[in-house]
Image (cartoon, rainbow, N blue to C red; front, side):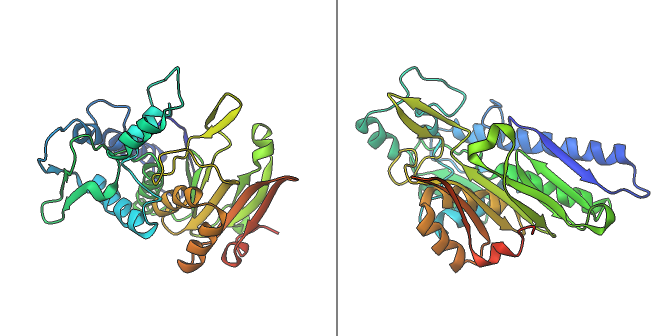
Length: 305
């Protein structure tokens, strides 16, 4: 996944080496299924198809694909796993481009190759066919969250009830840490990200949090800043003032995907969606006076006072 992971856990009679081996096996398996960097991954084998045959997916990938379609529909296309051609053309994939800013004509052409609604799901046979042969899948905005959930299941199967799992900044907590305290994590302040400055500290009780932001992965061209988060509706990196959004959800997979989708939507629509769907969210936005943070009422219960 191109990132790091960490697990903190309380063990009693369990064998820590067996737990570690199970975690490593699971991460390798998910990577082999969902990575866009591994040429023969399950996702890349689907992406290489250039016909309308129905590709049968493994149970794990199928679970993520169904959730991706659900969130695509809920957010009216703000979360879209078929953005691969646009991600590549903007230079945010394996490939690197000297001229990273595409023309409007290029964007318009690439948009014809994008859209989760162009994936034809056969629920009975657990397979997907393409409405257009150029269609590809990229699960980078949801796979990390899924992996966090899977590690939590492994730990629970080993009868570990107190743990914290983190993959690339996406976090899930269960039970309590030492001295019966809540697990604590933090949202990074974009203005002090290199120094690790916190914007807010959060108590996680049997829940998970994911953050999406534009302050780490971006490039500048002719004095203009381009975020790695691309709006599926127009094919361009997001331009609004929302810099970071954190979402709390029982499932880290959903928190991961929702954070990306709400980052695309921008602050006003994000709060409207979050309040409708009872999602605790915390946002940081750019203003003329610097960064300004906000949260909805359901998030405030998690803030460490």
